[in-house]
View 1: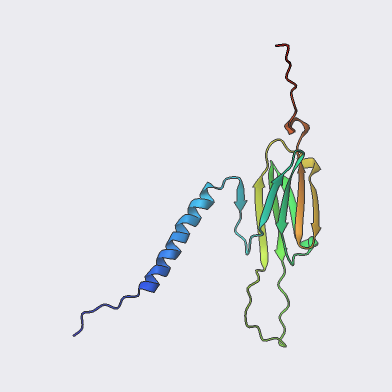
View 2 (view 1 turned 30 degrees about the vertical axis):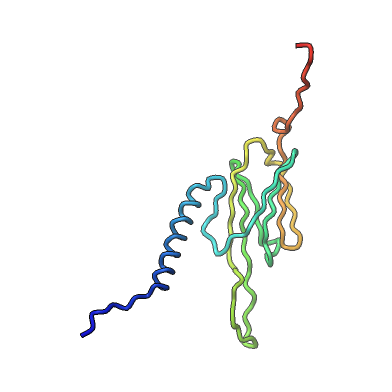
Length: 150
């Protein structure tokens, strides 16, 4: 009778990797209070930039029709949501791999109080949604002259 146990070090390494990813993923998502990602089939990636006059959000939405995108603002919470339609399947094709994501998506961002939500502009070109969010006049930096007569 053999009392030796079979060890699977590679399997244990994969389990450790998955557990670490789960722990760190939970940690990062719970600390990210400014950006909320709702449960969805896929999540578009975004770039957020700031200039003196406005903020810009560029969201990658490849293959999404403009008519399938909705942008709304409620209580300074900007939400981008929509759906990417799957291609029609035909019997003429043998599908070997499907890696592209389809289905609904939603991203929400808490906007700063110093923006004018009534003047947000949205544009869509080549799969990129661009939102321009103007700052209110009071939020723009002003220079204060320094007097030498003090």
